[in-house]
Image 1: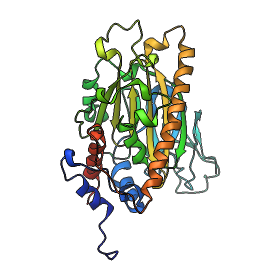
Image 2: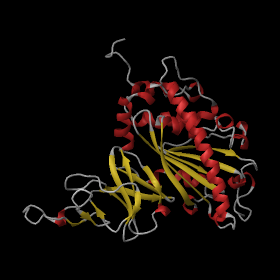
Image 3: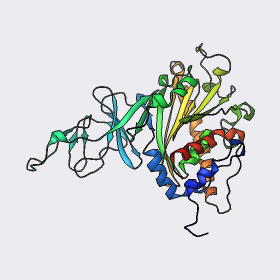
Image 4: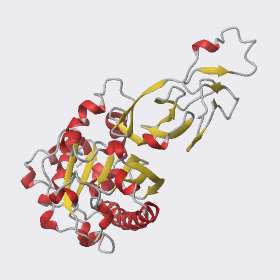
Length: 377
């Protein structure tokens, strides 16, 4: 077969999802390893869909900000003086330096190159030594705005002016779990890390709990049974499944003071995969999430955050409980890092072939269908 005759990764993906789920296989290797396919993902997915920048409660005051890169576009998200959360370009309108880094608090956005200064709404406040330029007009210069909405406490950002609002696209999530209001949970810890795997490998790892008994044997693997895992059909915007946890992870259960949840709902853990890359584990006691952005085919940048429900935070032992949850999730992340990096190493093997999927991997197949719906063959 010549290079001209070789089937493209996108075409391989479309063929992969053209069969019924009952005959489905894992996605083709090229979908994970090809720079060509990653470029298509950046153009058709990360530049078009809503990406999570974190939780709104982590920017409580005017001037609190965070930064991210969205489809190779530097972005600032901040709390404006009017109390709203806004997103805008993180590139100066003068000589195009990036402006802010990481997270923090600022009274104004000051370019580190020539000190052009912007208000929190992105309008230009001042620019040194520009009075002799007859074409310069401060009032016509501002940082371009980027769409930003808060949905259930999550800060969602998109470069696409035509993307349906999260509240519209994700209404099914609210209907699915009416007794667990994500907007009432509070993030207490976050960090960003980079793993040596493809972003989709990590996303798929989250989407199935088939791996829990083995990959997480040292932590949460014994808290649930494979036969109690339920993987219903998802929607075009998200997939989900749930597991029932026993008493071995008590902080995942409903607080004793919670009378709204009854029966199995008191020990049910929801795993929500909001396409393309917001992955939420929601229990009656705590939540944690990953928001993924690709960094080349073989690396992923991960925003990891965690917190607790309102009734567990009100518990007198909240501080100790949070420390226990963080210690548990730190160990879980170490296990997931090892498993997902091994998968990517295997994908690079010439002898590797995608195998058939278990019934517990329905979300993975639906994720492949979502990718195929976005990327033309």
